Amino acid sequence: MTQIIKLKRGLDIPLKGMPREVTKHTIRSSYYTLFPDDYTGFTPKVVVKQGDEVLTGNPVMYDKNHPELKIVSPVSGVVTAINRGEKRKLQSIVILADAKNEPVDFGRKKINDLSPETIKSALADAGILALFRQRPYDRIVHPADTPRDIFISGFSSAPLAPGFDYILKGHEADFQTGLEALAMLTSGNVYLGVRAGRKGIVPDTLTTRIGNLQIVAFEGAHPTGNVGVQINRMKPVNKGEIVWTVQPQDVIITGRFFNKGVVDMTRLVALTGSEVNECDRAYYPMLPGASIEKLVKSSVTEHIALRYISGNVLTGKRIASDGSLHAGDNQVTVIPEGDETHEVLGWAMPRPGQFSVSRTYPAFLLERLTKKKYEMDARIKGGRRAMIMSNEWEKVFPMDILPEFLVRAILAQDIDKMENLGIYEVAPEDFALCEFVDTSKMELQKIVREGLDWFYKEMS
Image 1 (cartoon, rainbow, N blue to C red):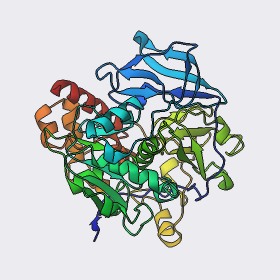
Image 2 (image 1 turned 45 degrees about the vertical axis):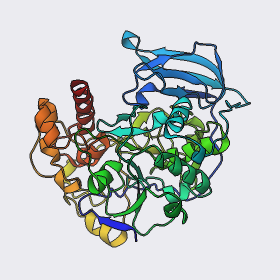
Image 3 (image 1 turned 60 degrees about the horizontal axis):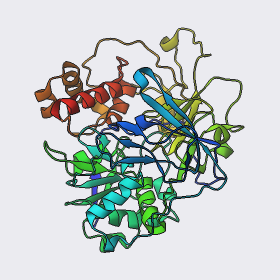
């Protein structure tokens, strides 16, 4: 019987613009842009020059600290630009795709015939291992490490998040192969978190074929789907321990690599948001780095300023209307910018159509009765101020951690307090909802990210 863990704290933001469970045409882009900053902890060394021809799966950069860890081209084509910023920091590599999309043949492999080191080496060469993350520090994994356990959140509870049970339909064989590969990389268990009451993500044969696979069901509001929350509730990370986390679509990519012998980074991306035409809110096969221009053209509201986000509204990255899908993102969200909005008396008005966490406005009554969805824009609606110890973060933070005290310890760079308060378990995304409800308008995700990076340097 599957264990069920119920979480009481959290908040589901009722945004308008959920995707329909329909898969539309593949989005093909002329140019693909790779961003090394998408791989936290990756120190890039470029191995291509402008004008070089690459195949799908050819490395374009590797990690200076771990040369076996590579980032590969998602398409075949020609390197057209290597963009650098201040102090020659690498910002992006742009590849002009050709019509052939010719892949490197890595050869098909049967998982049972391979050793853990061979699997790890193959994934590193194919650029897939760079998609995995580790806790503590929420960074790319080190190929030499053997994780205590590996965690996969089989659903996302973020606003307008795509349904992974739909995404996995038709990819069960690759998903299973990917899980079998992961099961060989850990000395412990592979934990798969699923949403209680949903069975679409779990093939019937998984539990019998993979002995160290543990399936745990979760019930509750966002951030229940965050893998960090699930780790905290299932098997927390202690000092000196390392665990890996993998997204479900990356498990599919892993299995596809071994089953077909080629690197195919294709993922289903949900086009979401209130400013997307209802008929176009759907799923589109895309490659990381693809421009979203063809995705959003004629699909969004015209004549108003729009915010385009690679990812969800809480943790995604702001991009232009012709910007690129960032690595690891499974959705593109389009909401109003809010620049043209002018409200008389602002918060002092009744505002029956506005969402409020604190129930300042009467709309929460309609939300309960009608399950109303809201069109929210990108405005912050307030100014920054000193941290207010109001207990408002704890109401939406379901981990057994005191978030306000941990953030204070990070700002003070107090190593002992950071350790005692749970720095090893958290990632910036775990504080995204706290940032949304925060009266002080603090950039909590940025603070946590900088704190984790500083802590890693101090402990290395």
